[in-house]
Structure formats: C-alpha cells, structure tokens
Image (cartoon, rainbow, N blue to C red; front, top):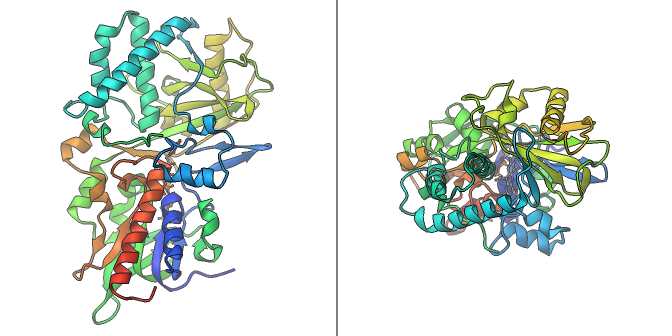
Amino acid sequence: MVSIPHKVRVCIVGAGVSGLGAAQRLIKCGIVDLVILEAQDRVGGRVHTVEYGEHHLEMGAQWIHGEEGNVVYDFASENDLIDDELSLIQTGTGNTIFVRHNGEIVPEEVQEEFSLVTANLSESSEKDFHTYPHSSGQYFTEKFKTENKWGTLGEELLNWYGRFQNCIDGSDSWFDISAKEQNNYKECPGNISETVPSSCLFLNSPVKSIDWGICTSASTSGCKVTLTSDQVIQADHIIFTPSLGFLKAMAKEVFNPPLPRTKVDAIQGLGFGVVDKVYIKFPHRWWDESCDGFSFLHDLKEVPDSITKENWEYGVLGFYEVFKHPDMMCGWLTGPAALMMEQTPKEEVAKRCAAMLRERLSHKFKVPDVIWCTSSSWGSNPWIKGSYSLCTMKTEAMGVKAADLAEPLIDSNNVPLVCFAGEATHDCYYSTVHGALETGWREADRLVKYLKSNRAHL
Ligand SMILES: Cc1cc2nc3c(=O)[nH]c(=O)nc-3n(C[C@H](O)[C@H](O)[C@H](O)COP(=O)(O)OP(=O)(O)OC[C@H]3O[C@@H](n4cnc5c(N)ncnc54)[C@H](O)[C@@H]3O)c2cc1C
C-alpha cells in the first residue's frame, strides 16, 4: 500500500467531482506532485451510485441539467455514458398523478391547465425576477392569486409546486429563495476518477486542520495539512473542495489563521439545503405502466407549523418511478422533513411510505408491503452536511456572492496558498455536477498559471 507523502506541491482536499476534476487538469498540465485526501471510503462525494441488482441507484446527483455548454454532458456523450438520454436529462417528474389527502385524483385537465399556468409564470418570472425584491415563493403566490380558478385545490397544487421547487433548489421553503439571485442561476440551454492515478488518491483520510501561510524557507510560505490521524503533510498549495455545509460547520476549527471576514460572511450568507431520496421496492409493480408516479397534495389546514420525527410525511413531494427498476419508487423530501426522515430507522421509513401510498390510493390500487428500502442521508453525513447550495433572501441581504467563497487565500507575495473549489463557488452553475467540475478546473488553471508565470518546474 502506498503511504501518504509528507511533502507535496499540491494537496487537494476532497475527491468529489471538483477535487477529481482539479487533479485531472493538473496532471494533464504536467503537475503530478499531488495528493487527493478524501475523508470517506469512496470517491464521488455527492455523486453516489449504488449497485442494486443488475442496475444501479443514484443516491445523489442524477440528472444532467442541459446539454449545450455543459461539460458533463459533453464528457458523458463522448464516452458513451448516456444510455437513455431522456432519463438522464429530464428535469421534471413526467406523467404523474396528483392525489389529494383524501385520495381524490386531480383530473387530468386540471393538472394540464395548472402546468400551463406555472409554465407561463415561470417564463414571466425570468423577466420580473431582475427587479423583484422578495422571494420566489412570494412572487408565484402573488401572481397565482389571479390565475387560480380551482380555489382550495389550486392552493394545494401551488403548495406542491413550491415543494417541487425546494427539491430543485435545495431550499427549506421557497419563501427563502431570493428571486433576484435566482436569475444568476443558469441551466445550460441545450469517469473522471479513471483519469486520476490511484497512487495519488487517499481514501479514509479526513483533514483535521490547515495551517496556511507558514514559512517554509526564508522567502517562501506554504501550508501544513494535518489529518485526523495526526499525520502532517507540507503542501505548497491546497485546493479545498468540501461542501458549503462542511464549511458552515467546521471552517472555524479547520483554518488557522482564521478565514478572512469576506469569506466568513459568504459561508454564513450563502444557503445550503437538504434534499433526500427514499427508494422503496415492492414485490411487483402495482401501478399502471403509463403512470410515472404520484404527487401528493396536502390539506393545507392540516399542515403542521413544525416538522417532527412523527410527521415528516408532510415533506414528501410524492413517489416516482425509478429508471430500470420497474418495481421501485423514489420519494423526495427536503429541509426539516428530510433531516427527520434520516433519523428514522429504515424499517419504519418503509412502513410509513407504504402507509402514505395506501392512505391515498387504496381505493384504486392494492399497495403491497415494501420489501426493501434505502435512503440518502446527506444532512447527517458529517463530510457533506446537506445537499447543495442556493441563494436565499439572507444571501441577498448580506450582499455575498459565490465569488467571495471562491477567492483564494494568498500570502504577502500574492502566492495562492489555499484555493477554493466546489459547486457552491460557481457563480451561475452552483448546485450542479457540471458547476462543480468547472470550479475544479478553474482552480487547477489558477495554480498552473501561477506556477508557469513563476517558471517553477511543472
Ligand atoms: C440528492 C442530490 C441530488 C442531486 N441531483 C443533481 C442532479 O440531478 N444534477 C446535478 O448536476 N447535480 C445534482 N446534485 C448536486 C451535485 O451532486 C453536486 O453539486 C456535486 O456533486 C458537488 O461536487 P463537489 O465536488 O463540489 O462536492 P462534493 O461532492 O461534496 O465533494 C467534496 C468531497 O470532500 C470530502 N470532504 C469533506 N470534508 C473533508 C475533509 N475534512 N477531509 C477530506 N475530505 C473531505 C467529501 O467527503 C466529498 O467527497 C445533487 C446533489 C444531491 C445531494
């Protein structure tokens, strides 16, 4: 087994998409004196594919958002990794049935008309959001009032649409999402790890602390990286990729000297939400071939003010079919409901999911017991602490930007000592895989440029 070197030119913290992307770029440019330190026992970070039967399940990232200008789509199609384009690129929930709390199925024409209304509002929001000073939830709620011809049902549908947006944005509530900042988010219109030699990758190697700007000779400075095992590594430069969730919880403990004010503000001000998936398997498929799943509407008078371990069902968006697993469904949860579900034993999760489906659908289908269940736990994963970043009303109020998070820590000679990559540091493709990859490349390019301009050996 190769042991971790005591001295390297570049130390990359984290083997998610951004960390692997940075390593790949550095190696391509001839910088091979590097290590990647990963806390967990696997690479990929928030891209986590689990084998199940002959196929797989995605616990984290699943869809490629857009084709044009999307580096991940380009990579996947060049390497023939897209076996079903529709399934990978889809961004909606397809042909689903909306079910009310009492089991009433929302008529198809209402569903279609509602989708049209939200599509139109979404289109007008692109223009209006530039100057709209409130949340995206407030915008849709205000505008929907004049469009709502379905009364209480319309309100329930809009409430579902808000929860759907929470899944996309990773927010607890769409009343937290800044409308103005939403406009900075772009969807592109339209096996990285294999290129990184395993000899430079160290799994189960969590970084405990980073001392930056320490003197390494009379005229140069560098960094000291200490692992939880207490091993110390001297590095000229660091590319730090752990999530914004990790930074929110641990930045104070990790960095010495402490991070500058602008970065601390960015860490506090940018949002980081929790989105989880629950996969449930049945002995057979009991719903129609033509149905992609069930979206749950709630009786808004009954929705509790706070979500607890006992009532996280209110945070379930619905259950949807799973690519290549015809007898499985995937439920989506966000915010506090996701955190509460994570704390519930799997057998209980399985029972409660089946009960939810039965409660609403037993008049139409015979829902059997769930025979297998698994779920993600991104909120309680100590190395991630959430799912993806977003711009909230707090972000706007504090006036912070992803660029503040991306700013490197430099020494008095402008040497980039600690560079920051990761999805949350991307100014427009934050919260995505392609955004994460681009930030890894961006920080690798920063170091290559610096090293070339200083005629250091590459
Ligand atoms: C449920 C879910 C669904 C998603 N769906 C999509 C989607 O459909 N499409 C899309 O484009 N994106 C999606 N995303 C977002 C996407 O997965 C992320 O934006 C992207 O993977 C982030 O990559 P990253 O490299 O920035 O961070 P990460 O993947 O978090 O990588 C950081 C790595 O650092 C490691 N680390 C943390 N602390 C330490 C430490 N102290 N020492 C050493 N290592 C450490 C972590 O273990 C991790 O491996 C989804 C995410 C989730 C959670």
